[in-house]
Image 1: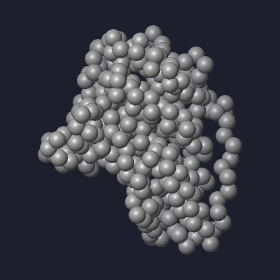
Image 2: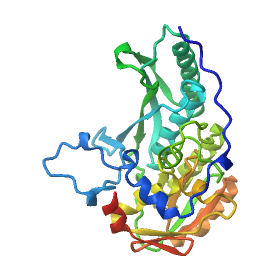
Image 3: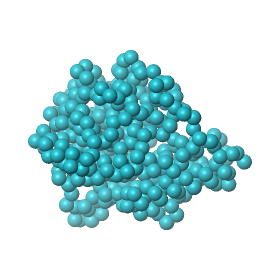
Image 4: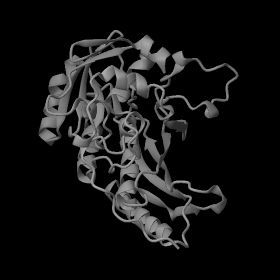
Length: 346
């Protein structure tokens, strides 16, 4: 039997060179299959999928089901994670649960229950036992923090030795509820002129990002920056903003970082964005890093003062990004073309 995997090597962001042209990164990541908004195998229609349809659908991969005739709905989302399960399964699991909760909260749903599945875990091996034990702790801790019910068996297992060297993966399914008296919030930008804010702390971090692995071909890096207490604060802020109807869209920063989150929010309504990056953060980290606990929101100009006051009172950090455009994409006063060109390139 193999020994339990040792701690990961130290990683320094300074060891990764900053790209000279951000557009080189953008168009390189455009062909990354992990950043595609379409899953061809889940489309059962007879009409061929057009690149122009990428990003359609307000639910953004969130399943919605009517519970009764009163307008109560159930929301469901499934997420998977394979990074560092062999070195820090507890933190990796907490990140995955937090990510699913953040997505639910952005949509206006209340996360209520969760189940987990560990794939390619040999429970008879010390490594498998280490991963299973850590994942169980992570699931229980995150469930307590986010007030979630866990299925009776907590974590299910699957292992086939014939598969060969397959990375251990944890998959979770989360259920939530939207009551009839609450309007759901979607990820898509609604109209030109709305302000764009980033809620959450901005940090220099590119760990385990699609940018680092796909563009720099570096897979040996730590988990993205994550603090479960800060995650709870940010999600509480989104709940409050939703209750006060101060935001028109909310998108958790996910795969591809801030830029691709903005792109997914802009594409459905053929809108664009004009943003200013942080002078205190590396450009590649700011645009493509996948640190946890960050959400992009669209705010009607009429609600900006109340929006700022609410977050200030809650002492939740936020950053003014810019505004929604009619279709042009601008970063630090430089034009990167129009949204229809970006769509065609995917």
